Amino acid sequence: TVEDGTRRFDLTLQTGTTDLGRGTPTPTWGVNGDLLGPTVRAQRGERVELRVENRLPETSTLHWHGMHLPAEMDGGPHQLVEPGETWTPSWTIDQPAATLWYHPHLHGSTAEHVYRGVAGMFLIDDPEEAALDLPRDYGVDDLPLIVQDKSFDDDGELDLSTSLFESAGIIGDTVLVNGTPGPYADVTTEAVRLRLLNGANARPFTFTFDDGRTFDLIATDGGLLPAPVRLTSLQLSPGERAEVVVRFSPGERVVLRSENSDTRTTFAGGRDRLDIMQFRAADQLDPAPAVPAKLAEVPRLDPSDAATERSFSLAGSTINGRPMDMSRIDEVVTVGDTEIWTVTNADGGSHNFHVHDVQFQVLDIDGREPPPWLGGWKDTVWLRHGERVRLIMRFTDYTSTEWPYMFHCHTLRHEDSGMMGQFVVV
Ligand code: C2O
Ligand code: CU
Ligand code: CU
Image (cartoon, rainbow, N blue to C red; front, top):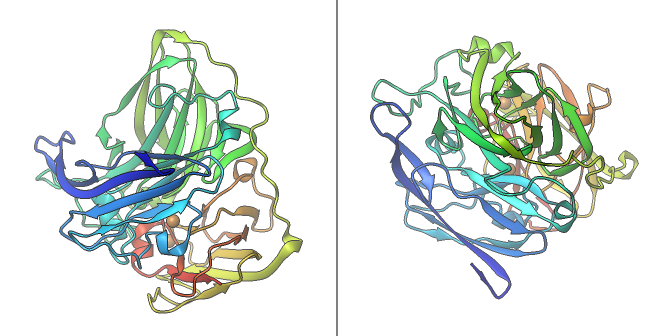
């Protein structure tokens, strides 16, 4: 609903049951329903207000992943919503069109709350994106795909236990897309835009089609790329998003799958190849133009403008040797500054790195120029075995000495076990 120029959303965290094809309904958690939550959508420049009511039996939080907003509204581990209570953050959307998402962020329980099913998409629109000739008919040729893996116990319940080998957390053998097992989509247009979210706790997905077809990557975490990047496969670690445009021919059947070359995941019990969903093209498809050659302006942040450089070493359950402490502020950032953050995967584990409040650009990876698919705005970046990435970001506004933002590994068990830190912008 929109009143006084504010777009209001009611989001109720609740328990439920979902038929996930296990022969018996599976107990799940969701937002306004049994599993996952509605897509929240707003325009750049619009003021939003979200009424988050917690009807779960536990304290939780709801975090707006990828959003530039005041730290008090961020929904991180300090914005607790107790059972029976309602939390009502509000802010003005001020960032480019993008595919963001929301999920709980209760310190120590993020993995469990997300795994039980609390998550949803948060889409931002803006006039630049709207002026481009891209598929944008929601649910028809513009599909949000929340991709998650789950495992089940013999009673058809979500298996929350993890084996000794799974230091990254739960690697499931069943893929759900938007909470649906064995998913497929009917295709009625020559081009379809997929908004992919890796909503898994631990598993990286390497998206590819069974016939090896190419697709155009048009957007990453924080919005459109400068130009489309033609790919045959795309890896997203937990928390990362991408928008791709895929072309179809009349009558064909194509399977989107994940082919993981990541041996640690395979070793941990994950399968090397997972079918994700099938696309079933109609015999007549509505024509669709090719993706525009130019997408959005992505002004490059200039390393010579950086006022501060910081380093973050990810190892064990720590960052820079320290486990997360809710009462310790790790970094103090001066508002208006551009900063360079160097992040190292120091123990070769399954790590990525996410920063709240800002979208960053990747300057280099192990000293090398990043590939074109990392040429846009990002808020989460995958760190392969031992890799070191340099990120550049600008902290434009929203100061607080009281409320910190988080930075952390988005492998959720790592985050929960301490691979997280806090910064304030002052
Ligand atoms: Cu998606 Cu700090 O989280
Ligand atoms: Cu986040
Ligand atoms: Cu990690």
